[in-house]
Image 1 (cartoon, protein in one colour):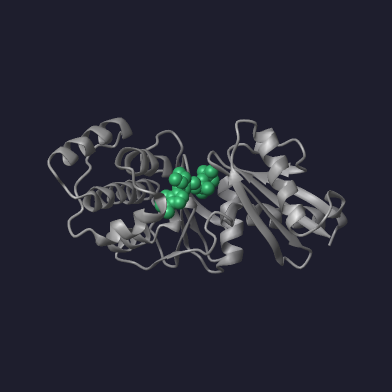
Image 2: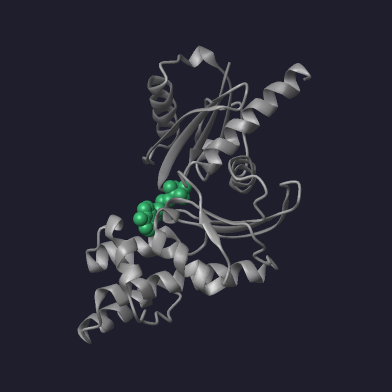
Length: 266
Ligand code: ADP
């Protein structure tokens, strides 16, 4: 028996499949396409193909993420915050704080002793503090490849100050730094500091106390430089989870198993 979690995010779509013993069998991802339902179908099929399974082997599918309501095949859909909490607590038991930075949103979630959500704060209204802010300011404006970004941030001795909270105004600030001959590494690190500061402030607004263990997830958690910036700013240990884009899909797959157990009364 197989259980699938499909996370249709603003930027990437992911699928995790587990068995009845909660063993993760596969995790796959792709860029989200305009048609959210088609993205869900494609990633589900890709996951099945990877483990050479058929859709008949899948007992229950749970969807999550921004596009979850568009995925017609799903048995149930759950909010991302819940999917992240369930997935992260399973992958890293005992987590107290989750920082998740995705393509177009960021979240800070506080968990209690039993892994339940205590508090959370989310930004999905503005690009600042999200992966998109990074993409626009470093990749598109400075021409930095996302894979080089982390090393550049780590190289910076003096991150510049990006004071603008708005992506458009931050872009003007960066253009001005470039014309002053400020090294690209300092501009990239300044962008990272701006994102990390904004997310910490957002969490504090929601009275999240950033208790340890702190786990960092989402696409931006692939960037070691940003993990280090969070550690410096919080003066606490921050652990980027392995396969950081998988947590919500894993959480959704676990919910699919729970849903089945509820149905059969076990
Ligand atoms: P979502 O679930 O919202 O679709 P993801 O969690 O998959 O988003 O994250 C996608 C984001 O991660 C994109 O904005 C992408 O630019 C960003 N990203 C990917 N790799 C890196 C990296 N090495 N450094 C910083 N950001 C990155």
